[in-house]
Image (cartoon, rainbow, N blue to C red):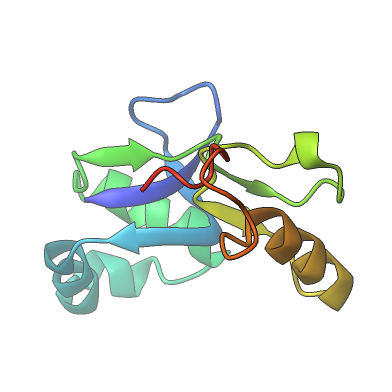
Length: 119
């Protein structure tokens, strides 16, 4: 399985590659990457794009899960910029962005009427 926020965004079923903000590879794909001669020969380029290229060239990762739009880049501290079904927010290295995001998703401060408190 190859799971993450895929590009291009409009190719929801079988994106050519997942963005480097975070993606998952099943163990069989990790083992294939570690042992593939083709991967060693093609080991140049940007990591996320290159990983997708390897999988496409090797005819691997037929099971792809595109998490877009539930994984996205930080936009602002406004509540409407955080989606209800968020899995991951990218570009939070500045402390203030991290604090805004934590404040929005902090389940210890919301009551049972919140949509975020549904588990």
